[in-house]
Amino acid sequence: MGARTLVRETAEELWEALSEAWRESAEGAVRERGLFVAALSGGRTPAGFYRFLARQPGLPWGRTHLFEADERLVPADSPESNQRLIRETLIEGLAQAPGGAHFVRTDPADASAAAADYERRLREFFRGCGAAGVVIDLVLLGVGTDGHTASLFPGSPAVAERSLLVTGVPTTASRVARVTLTLPVINGARRAILIATGAGKRWILRRVLGGEQQLPAALVRTADGPAEIFADRAAAG
Ligand code: 6PG
Image 1 (cartoon, protein in one colour):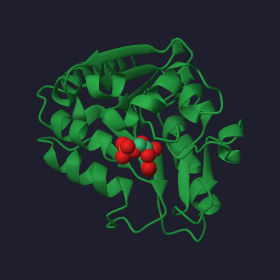
Image 2 (tube, rainbow, N blue to C red; image 1 turned 135 degrees about the horizontal axis):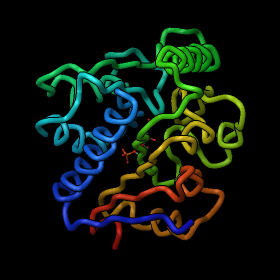
Image 3 (cartoon, rainbow, N blue to C red; image 1 turned 60 degrees about the vertical axis):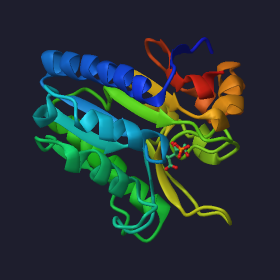
């Protein structure tokens, strides 16, 4: 896979480096296209980054549009909700509201309906910007201990989806139904960054870096090349 890996001793140092990468992508996108589009993941890892990012000065938030990489089909105020996490740890901490926060609507009856609604809105947004296609500037992804990323779980049909940009992930005994961006839109992004912190991610990160193809996180790349991995020393070993 040859992922480009950046390691920092602590999570705080990692968030500093990641916020500079965010700034570089945001300023470049605004300069070239007048706006910056990012897709954000939920989970514990990015929460610390979002709080750090919200405190960084001089970012073009008014020209920034936030989407979700994935979402659980739970009420928007549920503790499990990714949009609640993004709202509470990032948006509420910003001095300036983002140009747009385009969250998954979790009220549709089932995952497929919610996914179709989100894909329609994603396509409409880019069409409205006069873009030729759906090209997200920066997708920020976590890595599950099973090697999942977004809500692309090992062995799930969603991993093999090559035409839909957003697909539903049915509920299982261990998790609620979800909606997720698919690999075509993740790998079509200008930049894809996987983040991992803590010793609990060391083993799976080593396997992802080894390019094990059954791990969805190992399949992430962009048109420019392999994904970037931002890890602290505990996760990177
Ligand atoms: C989700 C997340 C998911 C997350 C991984 C890692 O909705 O569950 O988007 O893909 O990134 O599960 O989660 P942690 O960061 O909590 O380890």
